[in-house]
Length: 196
Image (cartoon, rainbow, N blue to C red; front, side, top):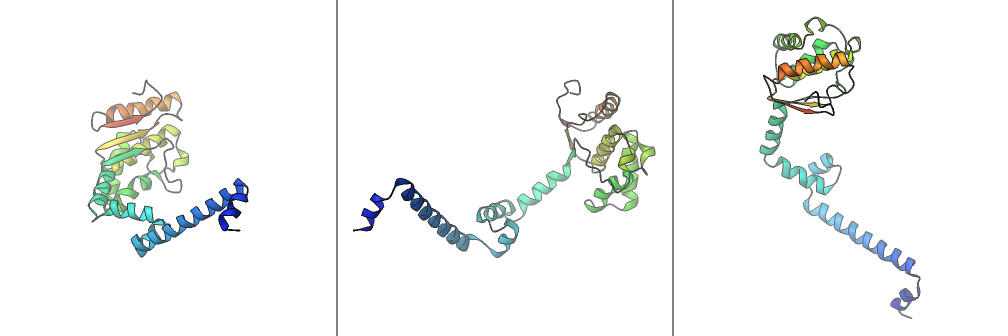
């Protein structure tokens, strides 16, 4: 009795399982061949061993021009999140000066001057030494706006900036945003038509 006769006598479900197992084996063989042929050792550490991710990373990184362009664009765009994303363990002033000092290489004095200027712009110049938990939700959102402004963005993105705020805090944040739209383009994601 030949092997094909055995296959014909087996129930379909068993033949299907055998077919799938063979297909899976072929897939793994191809994957190993592909990894050996196209991957580089440094890609494995960055991509978790996924050759497609490694190839995509090489395409994006290229000679560094695309990666530098993406980084340059990120520096020009400011983002104000719905949940403020302030560091809770440091005060308002430190929240505002951390990024300019670390990312832009500003001196502490220069970063603090810029921070105070932006805090005054949003009406919170006297809150620099408070921690985020000591502020109201509207004040935290205005601190988040000031933190974004310290980086001198060319455009600002707002993700539901007034969603978790009471009417008074909403009015305060909207007032700040009205002033900002005269200086810088704003992109606002919101459900509140009155905000737009």
